[in-house]
Image 1 (cartoon, helix red, strand yellow):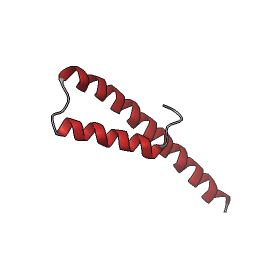
Image 2 (cartoon, rainbow, N blue to C red):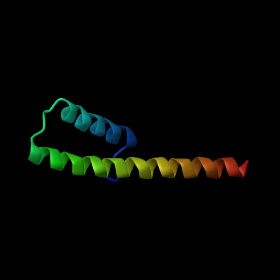
Image 3 (cartoon, helix red, strand yellow):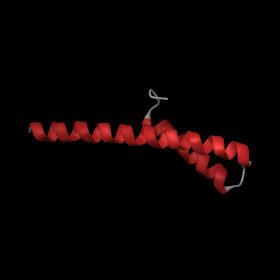
Image 4 (cartoon, rainbow, N blue to C red):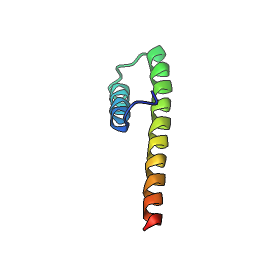
Length: 62
């Protein structure tokens, strides 16, 4: 999952949310999808933090 692009992770999160909102997930599947969503959120946060750090570093060099 670490090699997944940010946009793909967000797309997968949106798909999970849509399925939940439409009531398409049974209890077992919902638990599995929630775990996946947590991992995707963690990945997105990590990528955003890394990007923010890089931007701050570039701005500091000017």
